[in-house]
Length: 155
Image 1 (cartoon, rainbow, N blue to C red):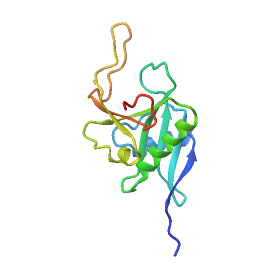
Image 2: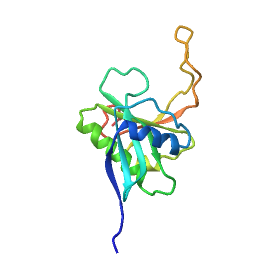
Image 3: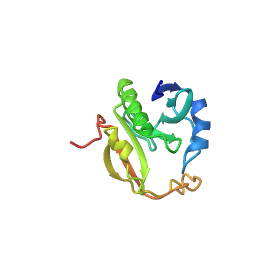
Image 4: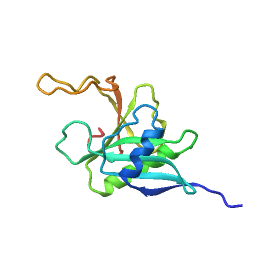
């Protein structure tokens, strides 16, 4: 009997965005990205991760995992995706790779992939009097996570 296992596969942003819209629990909308990767079981996509520019204007060569969306009940898929994003970003010459999780999420997939907890963000709205923006979907503080090779990881 042949055992089917999870494996990584290339994925376009055009393929990843609709998958995120269907599967992501909290933030189904994502605006673009630079590249994506998927995890498949047989021929079926079970998860995707989208990497792009980080929030804020950082002057270095930083990237961010903007979304990681996995079909519920697919063990190890998140860790595989975070690990693949980390290896790829490092190979492309990024100085940092960051992602964020909600305060209620424990981050076990990130820890399993070797990511380092970088503390909590302040949260808040992006709108300013001089630069009005739509209200944030979730303005609460978030956990910040860094890929283990990131320059911003404190020794």
